Amino acid sequence: MPRPHQIEIPEIETERLVLRGFTDADLPDFTDLRADPEVIRFMPGGEVLAPFAREIALGRIKRYRKEWSRGFGVWAIEERRTGAMIGYAGLEPGDGAGPSRGVELMYVLARSAWGTGYGREAAGACLDFAFDRLGLDRVAALTAEENLASRRVLQVIGMRCLGRVEYNGFQVLGFEMAPADRVAAGAK
Ligand SMILES: CC(C)(COP(=O)(O)OP(=O)(O)OC[C@H]1O[C@@H](n2cnc3c(N)ncnc32)[C@H](O)[C@@H]1OP(=O)(O)O)[C@@H](O)C(=O)NCCC(=O)NCCS
Image (cartoon, rainbow, N blue to C red):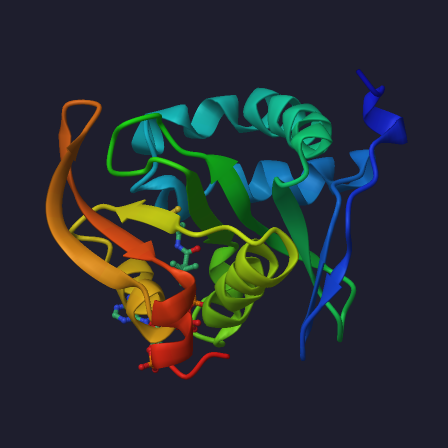
């Protein structure tokens, strides 16, 4: 098993963003992001986890770096213009037989970066990586029905809505995409 610092994390450049591995220097920005009740509102646990933001950020930085040993994972999102760490996005293993089976897309942006098109840009780059670099045949995504911004991101990047699905006892909206959908969506 490679040690975390030996794991090669690919870097992806988009028009306005860099998707890169987390560094220890990301801790303050990651903590701020995880402490914002609006940002974490739709995540498992929700706003009540805001006071634990630093511990969560610390744990996630370690975990996200380490998990790249399986060839995919979660990147820190850096804004090219400013060099600021403005969020994170990537691919995580979905749950075996459930609606998120295979690999699941996720993305989170600091509130200051909302409404800029960065959500679409980062999520699109993750899909490019999943299909073009990893050769996956399916990417899944789940979102709370009330999370209109996230639903719109998934729609704009061409993911197909499967309707309401049950996940860990919650009703959420399931989405999926296969390589052919990506071509149909005109993204490739
Ligand atoms: C979801 C999230 C990444 C969207 O980021 P964003 O940068 O605002 O998204 P974009 O600017 O790329 O917008 C994509 C589309 O969503 C629309 N949109 C953005 N916010 C919206 C909102 N609150 N309600 C409805 N539509 C919205 C945009 O208008 C755009 O649609 P368009 O291309 O037709 O104009 C951001 O809101 C976020 O980080 N939320 C908290 C974390 C989260 O819930 N992540 C998803 C679950 S893992």
